[in-house]
Image 1 (cartoon, helix red, strand yellow):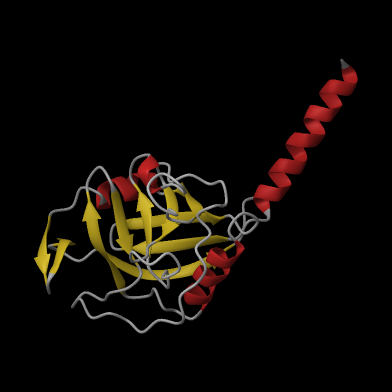
Image 2 (image 1 turned 45 degrees about the vertical axis):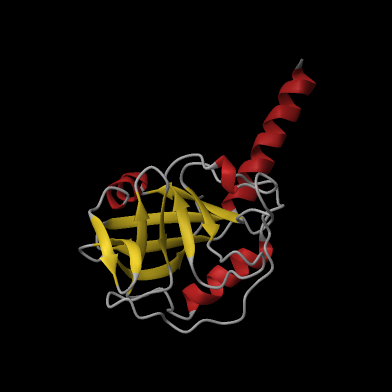
Length: 187
């Protein structure tokens, strides 16, 4: 019994240490802060890509340009005038990493082309199983989760939307990402 308890405690400490080592990013938005934990062990390409854009200041001043209640909020590509910001090369899709598009997870947005993700990401408002690897196609790569600011995500998910510059589901009042910065991992 004691050996089992010690093994359980050791596993728990190891798991919490691994989680504490995951990078975190704070999105300061016009609706409040959203803190995201990134899964570098499960999605190293997507995490490195997201951090590269974060460190370069790419997300600062962009908006959540696509908001669909009961589905997701998407950002990382457009400014408040719906001008797309320049991006780097597309990355490999890591949707086969075992992570699911569950509520409050962060995933790479892409076109119908499997390996087309660049800077855009989305936060799932519900469990979107149909976006998972193998459900209908290769899937959408989950690479993080919201650990603080879920109420902010919910608020953004309920803003009024319309059409703008040929795009649907655009918030009528811009939801701005004021800044995206790395923050210390949880202790």
